Image 1 (cartoon, rainbow, N blue to C red):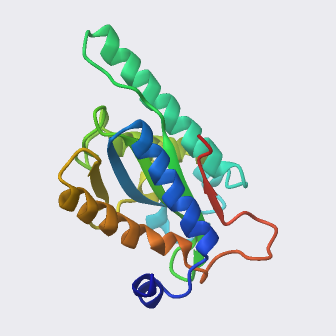
Image 2: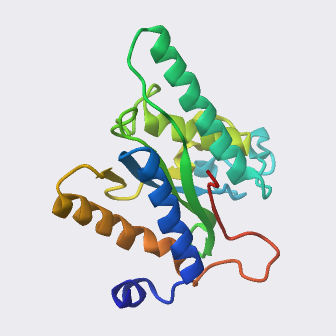
Length: 215
């Protein structure tokens, strides 16, 4: 635990415990779980034409209220359920599905308000994000669709607000060799402990800074 604190700064242990509990729930239902780190940025009004945002541009009307993160997960879950139903109609095998997640809202000078998110899915349904530049049909694209839908903005104009950091995917297999499973699990916990750091959270602002799925 000292290693986590030394690397990420002071941690809110309540958050870290909830993160671990959410991962444990995912593995309890889906022994093969894919964990995905993604950053969701909020649009900011700028005069720079490169950002496609200005007060005179109709595309600047976006919805960043406190429910935006809930709309994101609802949209992503709906897309996944629809995709699994399509697969079943095409006589393709599908597996049990429950979307689980963790999110934190932070503030920085570079990206203003933004969300760090961990998405947990059954790896037997989705084993990878897919090519980031694909037009449709993969998990990366569905995540972008869910965020622009939650913001109620045009997909092509604002899909850049979804950022996949370096090495965003962790594949957990509870039935693998103990050392192999433990290595991936420990790497994920170390990586995701960043979401529990106290710095940059909106403490005392009246807004939630942390959330996770209840299922």
